[in-house]
Image 1: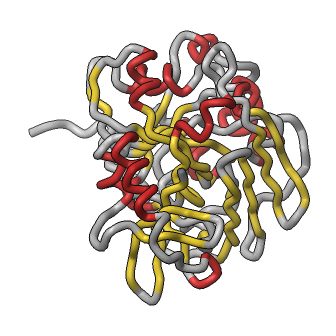
Image 2: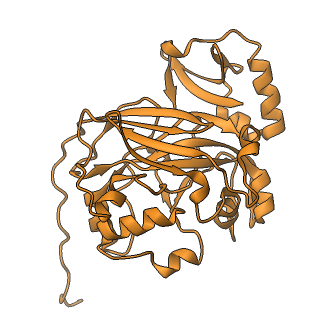
Length: 318
């Protein structure tokens, strides 16, 4: 089942995507509300919604499928790490620490955009980039989950584009902290939240989802990969996120960017001369079983330069 959040005539609604459009859930019900009820109850609510008249997709604006409490983003693709290490930090190869455990950062849940929204270039950015990912959405609260418990806790999946200001990110990472402003300006989620049961047949024997992924810029394909090329399956990512703490229903956990051209920075690190994104560029991502998102880059806000630090080095205390 495919749950969606959409704006129609100035009002926001939650619904279920069907062949003929979006079938609304009861008024004042959000997709996050539905996720928190658990997958069996959500499927019942969705089946009931599909019996209601549909709103044509052409007349609505798709919003992010849900408003998550938190958004974590992992870095689970080895090939991506190898390319980006070269272009962002100037290193070579995959750090041995990457293999020891999944690594993630928290990104901005207030900067989520819908499947077809315009994406402004962040202030001060001259190296704007996309990142092709899939995200899992947690369907129940839990702490220190085993991988099997985590697998059962996954409600569904959606496409995630982790837009990145590479020049800002390069500076931040040199301070051994971040990313921060290199990442928090925009994240696309969509077009809908596909429930886990819809993709059950795509799991391989090790629990990886064998879904084809592709990204194009202005109609030219830049990258493609299999989601099953992750270093860890989603169940192990959710389990790790909950290690010694909590995950909550509605939390979004990104896979990290796929390899084989899942972002421009990977290709830059491999010596490919491809321009950064600029206003007017159209980035389209398709993931098997999850749909397609398509965003246009636009000019962003111009802000004053950031002031440099006031150095206190060598000053005496009173």
